[in-house]
Structures are given as C-alpha cells and as structure tokens.
Image (cartoon, rainbow over the protein chains, first blue to last red):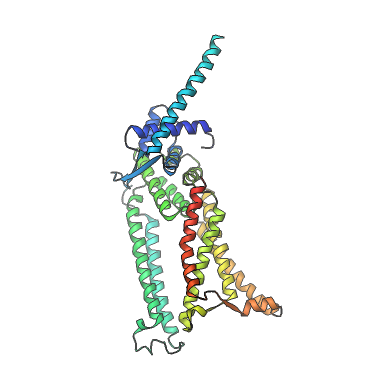
Length: 110
Length: 301
C-alpha cells in the first residue's frame, strides 16, 4: 500500500465504483474482476481497505447476505452520492486521458 | 479444515465459566464474612432471607450479570468458532493474530466484530480458492490490518486510551462507593474513599490498562508467532505496578509520615459522590465519553 501512488489509489477507487455499479458484488469478486481486467498484482489487502473507506465515506453501502462458505458476505451497492462520484471520476478520467494522449502524440510527430 | 475445535474459543468459554464461578463463590464468601459486621442489617437479623439485605441484592445482581456474560460469550464464541474451525493452520494463525490486534485497536465494539467477520469471510474464500495468506493480504500483515483500521477512521491511540481510562476511573469510583456503602450501611452519598485507593484507581485506569493494551499491540506487530506472549508480560506489568505501589505506600508510611501531605494522602479520604446529581452525571458520562470517542473517529478521516 505504501508503494502505491495517490493516482493509482484514486483510479482504483473509481474502477471499484464502476464495478459495483454494474451489479451487486462482494469483496472477493471485486478483486477477481480487477484481476480479470489486468490489475493482476493487486492483493485483497489493497482492495479491502478501499472498500471500507468508500463505505465509511458513504459512497457505497452494504447488505449482509448468507453465503455458502461461512459467515455472511457483504454485498455492495452504490449510494446516490456514489453514483455522482462515479460520474465525476469518468469525466475526469476522459479529460485526463485526452490531454495526456495529445501530448504523447505530439512527441511522436516531432 | 475438518473438525478441529478452535482452541481459543474453548479457552474463552472455560475462562468465562471459571470467572462466573469465582464471582458466585466470592460473593458467598463475602456474604458470610461480613454477615456480623453491619448495624442490624446482617443476614441473621433479616430472618434468614438474604435477599432482604443490600448484600443479598448486590450478590443476586452480580450472579445474574455473571450468568448473562457467560451466556453471551458462549453464544458468540460458538457461532464464530464454527467458522473459525474451518480455517487451516496457516490461516488460523494469521487470523488469531489479526483478531488479537483488532481487539486492542481503537475501534468500537461493533466495528471490531464487523471487521473480524469480514476478515474471516475473506480468509475462508481465499482458502477455498487455494491461495496462501501472504498472497491475499501481503507479507506485512500488520500493514494490512492498519490499513483496514485506518479506513474506519481511527488513528490516535493516546487520546483514545485516555478517554477509555477515564471511563474505567469513573466506573471504579461508582463501584467502590457502592461496595463501601454496602459494607458500612451509611448514606451512599457520604461514602469516604481513601486517597490511596483513588491513587490506585488512577494508576490502574490511566497507566496499567493502556500499558497492557500497548503491549498487546506491540507484541502482535512484532510478528510474534506466539501470540500469547503478551499475557505473561501483561501480568508482570500489573503485578509489578501493584507491588511497587504497595511498597511505595509502606515506605511512605514508615519514613515520610511526618510530612503533612504524605500524612493526608495515607490516612485521609474524600467523599466523591456527594449527591444523586453527581452520581447521575458520573454514570451518564460513561456513554457520553463513548460517543466522544466515536465522533473523534469520524472526524479523523
């Protein structure tokens, strides 16, 4: 966690919000999804604190449901504020991506 | 995996059972030892019905509390113990260490239980998928658990310990006043508490208990594989401080009693709870401090 930059943490939070927005999901499944999309060196130890912080900041909420594996599992959903934050994140990211892309393309041209 | 009964759960149940039995036994010893020393309120004088005396009521309350506490611990441990027993050895070790650490963290009771359940859930899933502990939470277990606790918004142990100590201190004062009242049958709002006793409470609440918690946290963060190592050290700290305290009082009495302040400290006392209002304020302050601690947490984000 100490090695992660602020930027990566912010990006991860946004990605996690998006993953939660798609369908109800739980901690472990979120990790697997991130892994599937290429974040394969993330440990659950990194993702879980982010989930806790998001819930603490009321961007997501959780409901405990019975799972086959043992203790009840926390399923996460976006709150209204979470949906707003997700929209902000996507806008910011697209903006950022545009600017960075332009600068990089210019380099190659010159 | 398999039918291994969680040792820790079993220990907790045995300890709470023994604690309850001691409470009950101690109460009966107390009742018998003091049955003649009260002004007309002894068990004998009340016609054999111990529940008519203040001692009887106190004893009954203590016994009931003991039984309730025992049942509470029993059920919580059984329910979680069933899941914990599913952990394999590697996960079990890590889980116990983490559980211990969460126990002495500054989280509230509900938050601690929530967090422990979450981690247990995580461990069971990861174990099911065949991953190792280090794979999912990294090699530095302490950093992982610190991150989880920090996500709840807690950072400053010192103030937290101070506030907790204050709660204990208030509780001691109220409780000891009650005991002294029962023993002497005087007006509860005129109970005189010795200064030495007050000093002892201050040491217990603000030094011994925080020290034990800090020692617990440190022993876990040092990666102590034997996570019960904190226990002998905690006992040693307690005995050491208590013993030191008693020795200090003896020395003061023997050599320094001619100094005015020392004489007052050793022989006099003070009435702390002087009116029903004071008592009510003191009792209310305990949950109030609890909410202060909680608010502190949500501010520290």
